[in-house]
Image (cartoon, rainbow, N blue to C red):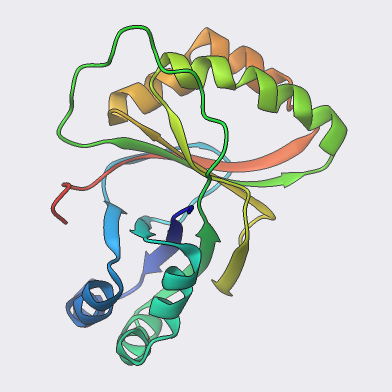
Length: 209
């Protein structure tokens, strides 16, 4: 069964006030098994725009991710965020299909993983298919795998583009190197004029977070 994910993008206006929200959320995450993959961290916005703070949280499935957001535990914490920040918040079903071929040589282990988070408006679905085929080669070469690739979703707050993709890489460096590679840039050229992207690359948090 595919996982479920929270993807909130946040601009915090009052960092001190926001701390009360952060302190109030563990009860909901522990009850519903939410695991942080990204929580702040170093990032580079490579296309379009992104908010200053980004979170990626994984749940056992899409229904559990939705249930956590709607739970009394989280709804008690949520007002503490609303008064100190603005947020675009999507909950989305994970990918359970085809993955890029893994690299021939496993990458060196890194303490933290790297992630691509992309929100996309596809303007030419037929033309976009060539990009979706071509990007698998560089993704595989750099050890990327899809966590999200479309899928059911619900925008809980704010606005995001119509399609969301999340890729996990063995490290932040691998995620950056993939984007900058000749292979990926050749693939990206195939989507020019066929889609609009907000894409940023971000370092994951410590596995125990």
